[in-house]
Figure 1: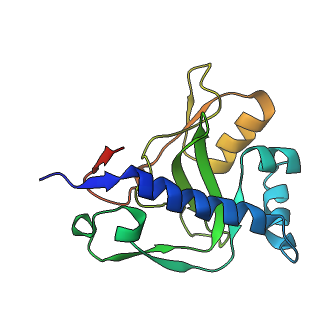
Figure 2: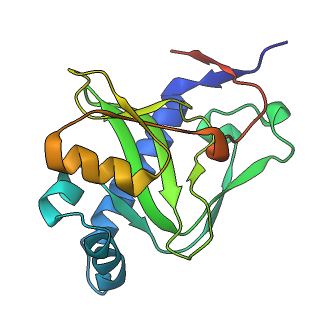
Length: 165
């Protein structure tokens, strides 16, 4: 049996999370994540255009409230780790959310329910495959080249649930 994601519930929860994190990044006393992004080579204008955000504290969330079937995962809750939040939005439609911890050696993670295939950019040109998220963001910032992020290290589940509208 294939597990089914309630995409409406997921998009509502994920968009609220992304919006909150974007506002938090530009709020008071959050200079550290902005400095981190600046040191990665990203401009403030690009950070705003990409809707990057900051999740200051790790948070546990209930799978079913996010429209995710808990039978697909080992637990009924999942972790939204602290870090830089990178949403993938196409035509005003949120498709994926990745979180990049600022601690050295911590790999990025993909929020459960996100599409595994993240393509950044407008899609007018074929995307360039990229293993490093900041290299991909810099390519997009510099030339507008679409970037397909290699997601194997971010894979969250063994099987991909199907989506419902």
